[in-house]
Image 1 (cartoon, rainbow, N blue to C red):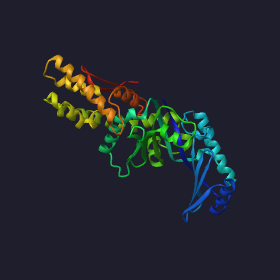
Image 2: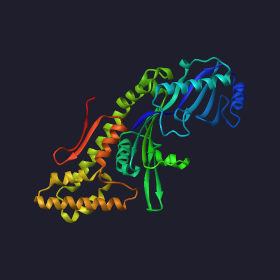
Image 3: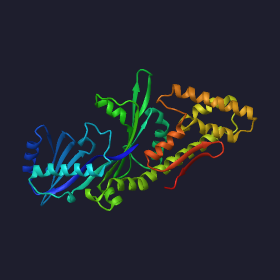
Image 4: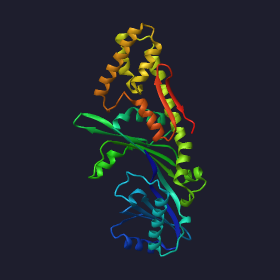
Length: 361
């Protein structure tokens, strides 16, 4: 798995006037398109190498020069491998400063550059993204239950070959200054690039804006914040919160399922599992619940367990969106460790039941 920086926007104060800046930007980037946002704000779509946009904001005694760029695309034509090396990251920032200096003709210091926002990314390779549907679904439900976001968005796509939908991810803002984007990087990459990725890539982006950056790191100056410190603060403060609510959501669903299965009759088993499919994370959880509440003979219990496996295999072969009911305990452990950056052991068996234990570092 990997973690690091993807996209960012940084600002610095410059003396050059708006009119001259506009002329110099268009001279430097002849293919750029300019947009007047207001009488005091101009933006430019650059889309050249790793620079996406430039924005100039007029202040009384100076101008704010904002530059939106990609760290990984400094060295590649894509952003699959994120920036996690401090030395090459600083090199990219120095080159961004040099661009501003060429446009303004002013001598500027790297230490004066501040973040408007940055994207900190975690990513893991998976066999197939749709195998993570149940985990993504539980995670999204946990966020909705615990935070208010009116602009939340889920993404799906459709496969003609199988005549089914599949999830491609979601965007969610838990609170002001923090946006989560969880998605299949392979889908996004393959849409725009000829060199295709085979297999799934689960990517989670934390987009943090200046106010929250300042709160987490006691500074918003670019040179004050190291990549490892970003990882430490994001994992111990932000990811810890969402890990906790994800686990709570799983326990809540397990309780709901156990209640539904109390005193079940053999003939009702299929309809109960079908009705509660959205609350089933994994076959092993249903197996454990049925084993725990069973009052019949061991032979009858074995029949129930076999029947549950058959029902869930049939359900996943027909389900739209596509999903998987087997192997999710192992996937959840991987997701928590590599995407949420929480050191954790996840188990589900007939002795310990479902447990999610934080490991001491």
